[in-house]
Image 1 (tube, rainbow, N blue to C red):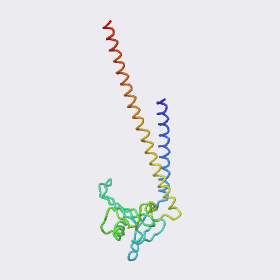
Image 2: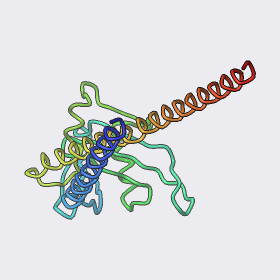
Image 3: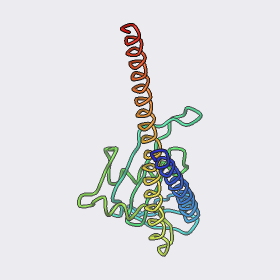
Length: 205
């Protein structure tokens, strides 16, 4: 009975993991298809910046910036230092890398609101709930922004469920194996005890 229960749990967990992987793949492809590439950033006049994308240009000012995330220096395959950053605006986010040709002007854009270079800068009065709605690349047409956010949320849910199913698949089986080993050891001990008692009875007789 326990064996059949474990087998059913294993099949169910495997099915959930496969479905989670399929959903993750589909949503990732959808996000990639809808993603917009930034070609350049230009300073037009004073504090007015233009983000040039393959879907058109987007104008922003420092007041549009809601949050800035700067990562620690990371190492690429060539062992070269690479600074990464993400600028969240009320028109979408801008991903920056020190390898991008527009990195210098991008750094100027970040310094326009945060000249200290903090790892995390956030405009006062802005909460994470607001930021979560802006997790799409700047330049994505407005009619697709909600779809991108939905795909991102669905991917995160699928990954979470898949991880839980993987834990359910692995750990209970290990626990059952340990219990089976303990039961087998106990049976061996009992068998040895019976043999000893039988030998003692023979000696007494």
